[in-house]
Amino acid sequence: MVLNRLLDRLQLHHTGHDRANEFGQLGFMEWLGSLPADSDYYHQAMTAYQKALPLRLTAPAIGVFCDLLIASTRMPPQPLDLSLPSPHRRGGARGRRMLH
Image (cartoon, rainbow, N blue to C red; front, side, top):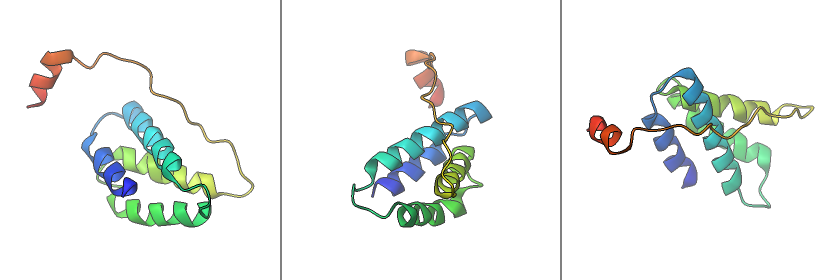
């Protein structure tokens, strides 16, 4: 289940508001890319929203993901504000050591 793995990853990222937006947007794009071509988008979005909603308060990125799901189902359709994250240094080996 792509959605379950996605929500698990989004819960791992307890970051600031800017990074939460980036991770939430990336999660939405990943989820969108995982949908079967012939699926009912509204049904898929509402199913994902219902699954993510209880986790919304656990991680800001899941809140962003939920907001994008709702925004993508509004009528009339509006463009979504999606962007790829800006490149940044993550700390290399030293940063990985500090995580443990």
